[in-house]
Length: 159
Ligand code: FES
Ligand code: FES
Image (cartoon, rainbow, N blue to C red):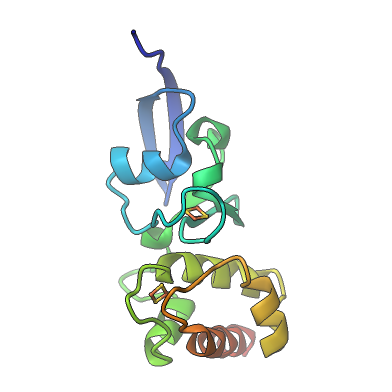
């Protein structure tokens, strides 16, 4: 059986990519398998864990539930696109300072969610951070350190 592919133009971390993809290919698989951007993790592949969180036009989305073709003409940012001029993003730096990970598998998704959470204005208290980061699971239970990192980064961004 021949597979039908379509041209898909993607803007990822400021770089333009032209791919031939089956229409059913997810953004997550396009990033990881076609573009080698493996920082975005595949946890559940069913929208349950947040490991695949990326930004589309600045909003957080689950790449496992998003078709690559759906984001044509939009701006995608992955964990690889957060640092600026060799300097880690303040949220990345805060995760390091607060030791906010153990195995690290959930960490890219946590960081992408945290950047959006702060940008959305939902990092005003630990309870609010927990609520708005609830879609990002951590099997290692690093939650107290993750909340501390988001709190630190939110204060730095505000100052
Ligand atoms: S891999 Fe997308 S939510 Fe788990
Ligand atoms: S640090 Fe291991 S899953 Fe979160």
